Image (cartoon, rainbow, N blue to C red; front, side):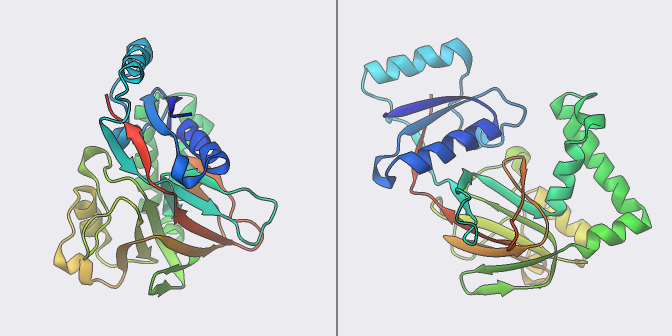
Length: 270
């Protein structure tokens, strides 16, 4: 198969990428055309086809008939999650992974009280406000800021102890100019960008404001509570759930997972 069109959101894209990873050789990966129509379309914001519905399918047919399907593509790798201690569990593939405070925020967003009463865009806002409200109460603030026990090994970087927030992605663009990752070696599309924020981080408010605007001032880069970089492989040990493209997953009995990147995938552009 030379091209697979995916009509859906991030969860559907993740399902298809997982199936492609299991059944196609790395040097024979089909191109993907993402037609965003799901609840969350973070992936499509970076590598989406740019059209949807019947018009998108007709344009794809035209590209295929003219032999120009891969004339205009964005090349990205998928993010693979493996459970090395669990032989019966197949790897899954997505493009955005998070743990600790990110998992708590997603679980808030998935509560029926929010999902059943708000459209998705509004639910995101309500979830954010709920998270802020949790941080304003002393008991919840202490619980959130204490973080979760997480160990990571990313290249030569090893961090152990409680973690307030962990994010990783193989995307190169996030909505609204948000980009909480940085590296001293320039951006690469074939590795995993990651951010690790230690428990009880200092200067959290100004750090959050900077990262949400895609800025990485020198004081933030020098602060040991904040660590970012890019690696082809990241090993993690966790005691709590994590999130891949909006789906909450368990780290398993051993708590050990490995993040890696797939071979580059061509995402077709209209």
